[in-house]
Image (cartoon, rainbow, N blue to C red; front, side):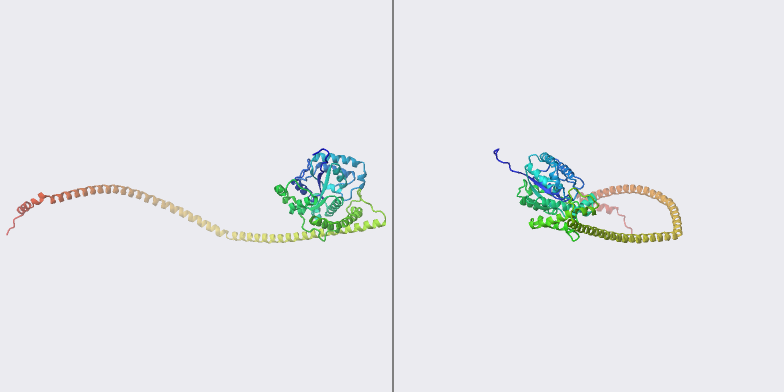
Length: 469
């Protein structure tokens, strides 16, 4: 590129939103899409275990700027306009230039996020421009009740204080970015469909992210786990119990995040901010803070005082109605818990009473049967003794029978030996008989036996005794 050709502007995606509104989640998603995050990141804590994705140096600088104007991150009064005419502003600009250089170096696509920037937009718009950045604003919001409930849990604040702080942040973020490249999104939409939110940011700001959603999806899905949403409201968003100051901006921002901003809504937002500023001194007294901040407008003249009084009355009424509704819900919850506990106690009492009666009845029955059991035990002991004696006598008889059986076994052995000998002799005799019979048959079949038959007959005749008459 020729040296005389102007460098393209560096892009700073500035995430704007109230504390506890999902700005950390949004900045983390933008980081996963390829934008550079600060080098010196604020570490995670119990409220944000995965980290805040904001610069510690920017955080310290913003706190110093607010403190110099007599304000703080949790002050819902406007920052004193005298800050921007103070000689200290030049000092803070130099520090901002140093911080941006240290945190982002030569990066051409960064994410800058700190909820305090909502209160200091004129300062940071100029500081970014001086550092060569073109700021593109991503305005996000979360339901006021969810933010207030989260702050109540973390800080112990009443819900009304959290709502007023939410209102101040969203109104100043909207008013301070008019005429600048910006897009509106919501924390709820980011959690439900992060791809659509990323596409809305890219389309609304004319920006192309370095990474595609498909490439970043595994990391983002793991990052946007359900545990990021530490506190969920009961679903009563923009309900009738919300003051108009809170309900109407919430409805407008929700509509802008869903379908784009409408210029005609800006007048209503301006009117709400003006009414908030008029009521500020009396709201502080109602809240127990009688000393207004340096930047708080003080009403002057009868009409201004009357307008402030009416605005404060409306705000006080809304706050009282809110507290009354909370007390009624708490009372109803306590009564429900008491009824449940009473029913549980009654059931436990009945069960324990039944168990005690059953145990007592069993004990009395056992005591009544004790003599019978003792008699049965004695009878069993006697029977056992008799059986043992009988077994002893039978043992003698068994020994005698075993001795006699041994003698019989010995006789059986002798007889078996005799039987074997007789069987052997019988076998030998049988063989001899067979041999003699064979010899006899041979003689009878021989020729000499046949030839001598007449001779044998004559001899037999001679040997016969003579008969006498």
